[in-house]
Length: 374
Image 1 (cartoon, rainbow, N blue to C red):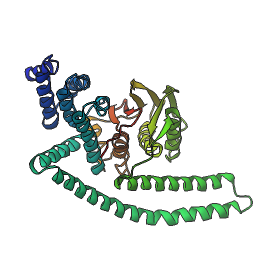
Image 2 (cartoon, one colour):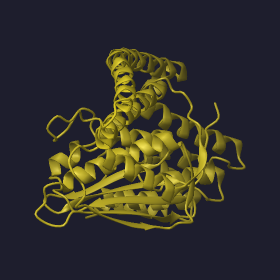
Image 3 (cartoon, rainbow, N blue to C red):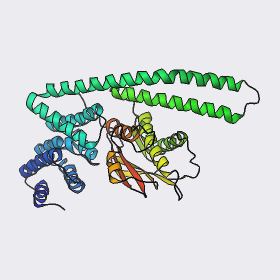
Image 4 (cartoon, one colour):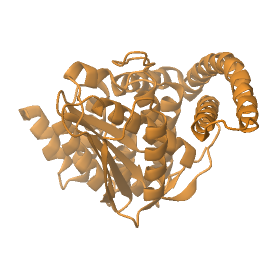
């Protein structure tokens, strides 16, 4: 329920007086940063931010550019897209700085939204007290520590994978030279080799991600990406999935600008979770993969299952790094998917689930990437 103070803020955001609207935008930005804003109020603020991003007064548009830094909502991309190429240079600079800082933060930290917001607040306070140089130094230190960790982990894992890969290549060659060896045996070895290759690619993506290497973006057919992710996801699961019914509801005309390998990895992680949630059901297991236009500049991909679902605590923790409810799980899948979607592709990932009923993961992506200039 919206209280009196919230109603007053929303009314000021709708004000015809531009100065009142500007003040309200600044207050809304402070609320988004320092308060727990529920989903209903956040959506109403987001709607108004999107409208005010086209306000005739540049002062209001500039205030919106600053406030958007703390807006965690699907409309963030649509709003920032309106002002990142604004005719006013001050508005344009504020919008690009917001876009860059959102990217910097998520690049330096794999965690949930609450922690991201807390870090945004600390970095903003740091800059207010000590200037932009202090903020950049703090981010540089965080990136350096993150990079050290990833390099060390990468080195240790690759040291195990490389001889395994070589052994599988030799085994495949030797088996192929033996007369009478069942084709099935050879296919098992080849499948294991393909999995090792996929694991190596995942590690390479992690290393590139940590070193902030700019990925290559290409024009992609959405249906093609989804089908490849589905095939790879099912191929990566040891348990049989023959009884799984997969339904596609995809607009075949959809295309987006994407880093194909990273988007694939994000979708694979989501689909693997969905498929595993359906295994062992006492009912027909179903997976629905859909994609449609979300707005003029965005598409929405939804991956829904009728599996075991999650309770409130599991739903809250599932995008936290190293948090997992699966035996033998590492707690890397969904956090990494969220990272690839929100950092690399400037999109959003949201999850809705009910225990015993199933889970729906919604991914909203821009059709074209907005690039912040340094």
